[in-house]
Image (tube, rainbow, N blue to C red; front, side):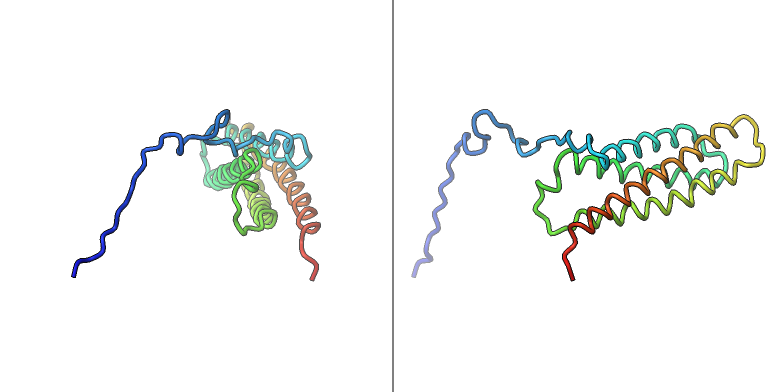
Length: 170
């Protein structure tokens, strides 16, 4: 008795792999510039700007408190940059994942705010005694850390309002 044969036909169709005429492979990717004209979008841009100022003025980290401050600033900057790209590239709409995006961002921003509170207090406290020429820039970094804490707190407020408005009633 012979085993049944399986026949596979492979077509070399170059057109099947191409996007339709006038479109490209990333046509689903449409930048959302309008988000950054809203108050939450402006707050994200302010957070990134203040984060850059904090990183620039606190470097190099000469004291252990500044190491902690820069750790918080850099990780917060990276997470905010990721959320900025999520909104800019409309990743929330493109990915059909069962993620509560608003709650996830609310938790992330809340944790960031608490860490920033601790970090700017540490930064200002370690540089309060006179340490020479780096004192002014590091106190500036701590001050912008305070301003960024306020920006993140405003972000938490708007995310909470958004979450409360979209949360299912119990």
